[in-house]
Length: 506
Image (cartoon, rainbow, N blue to C red; front, side):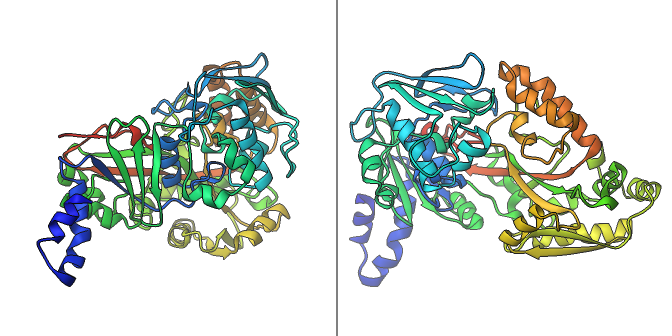
């Protein structure tokens, strides 16, 4: 970098080696420099079908153009690489690509670029595979070979997707990185490791370089600013760097700075409502938890605000519904009346239900970062309801097996994130053993249009809140703070920070 070289020439030896990185960071914040710097945790991978973390999703949104894109408001998707996505029955979908789409290496984006990338995701068992098998339920997607009955290429720009059952939210689901295309060269070579180090996409930015320290993205058309995503997993370091002028955008805020964001950054901060929520699921096979009154009592005894502002460090907000606020379509605030902390009402409700005898274990995954808040909830239940509440951390595989075998004898933690912006996507992930809720969720998924899914989803939510098979606790949210020179900072719950929209003042 020229600015670093000029500065280093003024000093000598070890002093130059020490100051050069700091000078480089400041150069990125110099209005005369064309780069924009963003701090984030390092992405786990940049192979599209395996992308699953916030940093990976953020970078993928700049490097690739999917069939659809989120509108930035958690609502209806818009066509992007797709010219049209149509279906007569919401089960068989015909996708027609826009003409002329090309990857950064100049190769043409075709129907096979998508279909063969999807087959690779299924064959390799990448993170996105479950969206094909469990969410979209593409016909024949359960195997580990390239023969998927529900994926048919019709011509260079057209392919057909057949699902096992109707899903109105399928076009919205297609905005997920799991459904991105890959060039024919990498699909033939199957050299995923090399591709992950130097991915070739079809979006507004190309990857100039990518390593453990940073990812450098440059506009594919040569116009605009280069974006440098620096690997900075520590929220406090990001925050201080923006304050010092060494970083343009921080994608995390430390707990102790949550209350001072407005003072520190005035109008240059943003809280992005999330798509993920945390629940306590009540095991339906445990008869002592069978009555909804017992479950309502457990919910009212949880002081959600005390937990989110304490052990969770302001990185989550108390839940007042079953649907996370990152979903704008049809979501209603304040649907969960028994999510309001009321110790006296909780004690009275539990007494009316005949009490709850014996130990009440709270099962959760060991090593998942839940220890502090689970202990806090157990303490609240002991204090308010006089229960023998006991945190029980077990390895992930053991927990899954215990749930499957119905050996879990108390509430267990469920972290769930909606896969596309519709209430049905959030509710479908919750336990709803038969009854009205199941029928209503299925009706919402089969709706002729996204707007038509709202009413049955709301009715399903009301039904689930009455029976409360899962107690909503809180939803995650993201924080952004940025420098005075930065403009165009926008984000949503599904794609994260929109790197392609960032600009800086000269």
